[in-house]
Length: 581
Image (cartoon, rainbow, N blue to C red; front, side, top):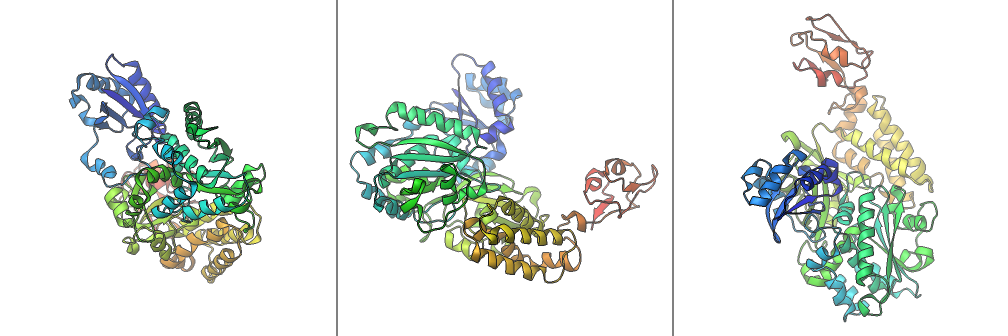
């Protein structure tokens, strides 16, 4: 039997490295030990799988180093009773069984450090098929039939971009992968690179052949060190096997690949800013046209897609564009990967066919809201997206339907919020992010987001005034119309959608000086119920502002003039004597 330890970033952060070491120290003859990437069930990490040959026998979850001896014993004897307490439940297994995995098909299944593991799953067969008899135009036609749209956020038809680059004059062309995943709460690209790097390489090589590129570049954020290490290893293996470099597989097609580590600027997710950074310049967007397909990297024809887009390519070429197009909706084909985070019971990576509803993803796959609290909203598309409220939970997931709500699909971030989330505070959070990440090139984005953030900050601090909401809306429309790139054009979305669906919360903050979610410190007042207070003094010891006074075994009181609204007192009280209002 073989023991396989999940070692994606999520697993390692949860202690998978220590689990691996503990198992390795206790390993016995007849039992193998290996690693895999992220299966997507991040909320259950560390995860250990037991295999008999190629068959998964048992999945063990929330494993720690103390379980190592029992795991090795179970693998040696085949008796799994000793690990029954850490075995995955049927309810948690449904997290995966309700998904359709294409981009994530090998994630958490194969060893990401082994090219042989990838080849055993049909790896590089699509590249062999393409180079063995398909024309570049034939490849582009197959992608067109599939209906694959860019998964980086815009949803632009992949075949169209490839065809534009193909038809642009010039022999020097470039293929670029945008792995600069900057949305808060998004980690799809990281997981694919860490868990299945060869699928990215194969997809990019097919794209390079289609457009006639001589070089391929993966622009990945430097904050993904494990992804970079595994991708570098995969590239070296591909070169050694003849899948990368000169005269690939004896076909006459040559293309090499390299990695560029970005410095983490969110604006470099915009394709022209990314190109500027690749050229060694400050990451700032260019005016379009010309588009990258005509004048991109070094002003040569270039094509840019994100990791998830390329991760679908080999599957499409192996199985046919029609099969991919048979999934999804009329205007949004195939599957989409989402990073499900926030106040959700089962957080992790989810890949579903387009057309499922938000409710199905959040409640059926994600298990619903943590602590069974009331669902309030889901943020889609990160700082560029919007908040979808509870009454729109049955909205289907496709580009057009989500766009109609005021949100966007984006790269796939899906942040779930419960009743304790302040929507004004949420809008402020995203505006703070975009204002800081603005490159400053255009006035509308540089100053407009700053002014919006100032207004939102004033509102959350109890200093909002009549007309602030209308001023926010006016600024939003001005920024959308005047900003140069997608960062500025979409920055107002979180504000516009929260105003649209949660206007009552803005009014409560401004007119009543009250935060309905009891989140904004300046608007929350804490009181001690003298009938419930036992005078233990725990709250006064925890108060950083020394605002709580009293005598032992007698009710304590809070000086509201000194109170900073941190909530430490209420979190400390074991008797329910402190409340927020």
